[in-house]
Image (cartoon, rainbow, N blue to C red; front, top):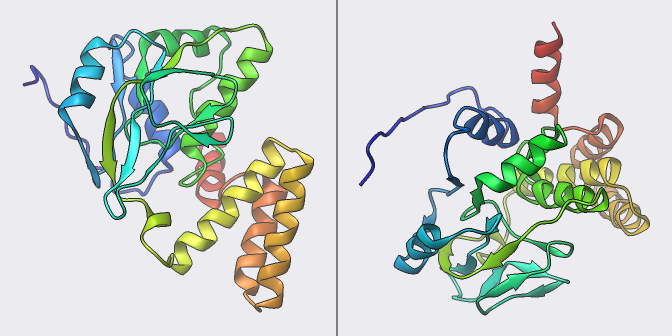
Length: 230
C-alpha cells in the first residue's frame, strides 16, 4: 500500500521520547505521523479516520483486548466512548494510535519545543506531549483534538499483576513528572508511593525513585544526554 518503506532496527534501547522525536524530525515533509505498538490491532475505522483527519491530533479509543473495555482517551478524568471533538486542555491518551498531523508539529516548532519530553524513556513519554500542549495553550496556542475511531490494544493494567520491571518504571515516571511538572497532588502521590515501598522493604525501588526525582530524568536519558554534551 505504501510507495516507500524504511525499516530501522534500533538495538541501542534508546528512550522512546528520543526515537519519536527523531522519527518526526527526519520526516518533516509528511502530512501525518502515526505511532503504533506491536500489540495493537488496527481497525478499518481507524484507517478511515487517518485518511479523513484534518485535526491536530486524532486519539482513537483504546479498547483492551483482554476485557474489551474502553480505557482511553481521557477527558477531564473521564473515559470518552463516542466520536467527538475533545477539550485539549484536559485530554490525554497513550502513545499507540496517536495520529499527529503536520499542523501540530508546526505549532510546536514555532515555539522551539520538541513534541515529546526527552527526560522520559518509557512510561510518561506519551502523556508528555499532552502536558506540553497544556503549556503551549497557556502561551495562547490553540489546538484541535478529536476521537473518531478505535483500535484494540494489550493494556498491562487490564491484564493482572504487573512485573517488577514495570512497577519500577512507573515509579520513575511519577518521580520525573513530579519534578518536571510539579503540583501538590503529584508530590503527595510520590511521597505515598515511596512510603509504600519503604514499608515493603523494596529499597531498590525507593532508591531509583529518589534518584529520578533528583535528576529529573530517566537514567537512560541521563546517559544519552551526557554523551551528547561530550
